Image (cartoon, rainbow, N blue to C red; front, side, top):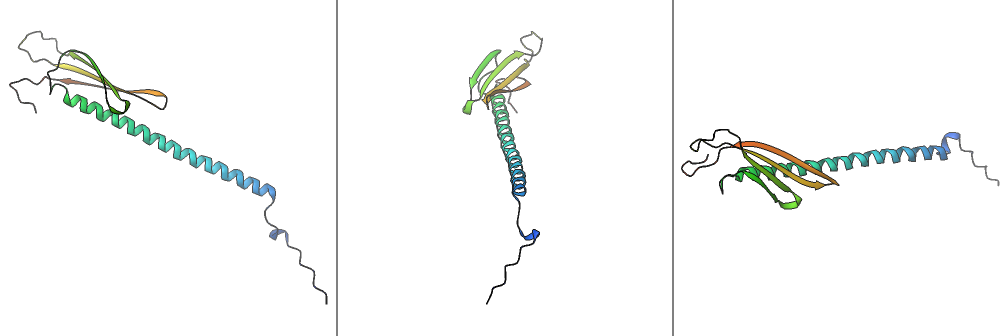
Length: 139
């Protein structure tokens, strides 16, 4: 008894050629690198947003305490905050009225600096403030 010869596979049943596999791997690697770039860019943006928000919160806290615990006085002041943030404050008279009984209006210029990702960053804030006096309640 003789066995029948196996049928020849048709051209559609042969599988993928080497060129088709290489093209598929190139497309896959390009797609994966694009997705990786999107995720790493998103993570970088998230870190930057967190840093800028934290710097703004430090500045808000610093400005809120000025003139409350001790009276405002003209000059330059600086200090360090937590997590590598540093502040610098310039306090100057904003009004030109030299009378001693006149209300003093002060200009506060606050800068918050920090170093991240190989670069220095800085936020600047400026506001006007009337000093709290002993006989007057502060809102």
